[in-house]
Length: 301
Image 1 (cartoon, rainbow, N blue to C red):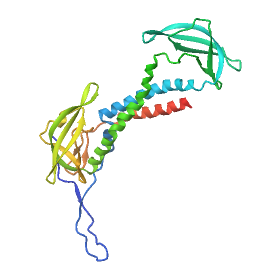
Image 2 (image 1 turned 135 degrees about the horizontal axis):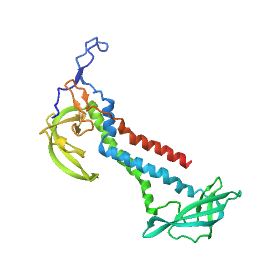
Image 3 (image 1 turned 90 degrees about the vertical axis):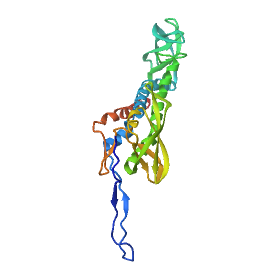
Image 4 (image 1 turned 60 degrees about the vertical axis):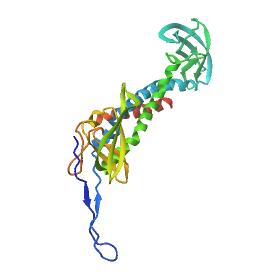
């Protein structure tokens, strides 16, 4: 059970004010809590949905790094030549029930240099056939036979290239919630809330539904409700009243504590405490995503 300490306040300056020289009245102001760096990383990167989003984005960016240059490169073919088919072999892939074949070919570029290539099709030509080939004048090894693709799988697999956008979109969707939680942890006032509603959302992660739990709480006699979404509802159901933080300037904005990454607690001194542990691993997927973005851009240049 999370305990609620007394309000975390400090007394303001009691010096003299203005021209009258009158002493200032004591002022009570809320002190901002210091947020441990590890707790900030947990809030921003540690939520399961966000971690999954970064992994999703990194995997999708890996696919883009491998295949996007092949697709973009085809638009840069600016020279023509005649190629001879040297080998046709069946692969283990298929497209709508039709087998995919690997076609190897050879041609001579405009400067007289011999070039070779391999492309894929479900309608293979016969060996020794002659076909038109397009290639880049600045890199003749980058070529493509007319009517054939450079990827050894069906075209609809290119949907993998949308994965980075899906992953980043998932992260961006949860970012405002992370920013709000950090603000409430730093500046929020403490209260307790009672669970009044629990329901499944339409979002699942590894076949586990995200739960939406609504809590009711009071501020200065007024009743408010706040809904939090989590994969693990258990920590929010073990107490009759759950520890919460709300925005003193906008009491309708609030969050519970037990569902947040790192299980933050507020000590009697008013300082935040979080479960100790190594959090650097939370940055692996975001850093991998950034590295793959850079690698993809460099490959496209």
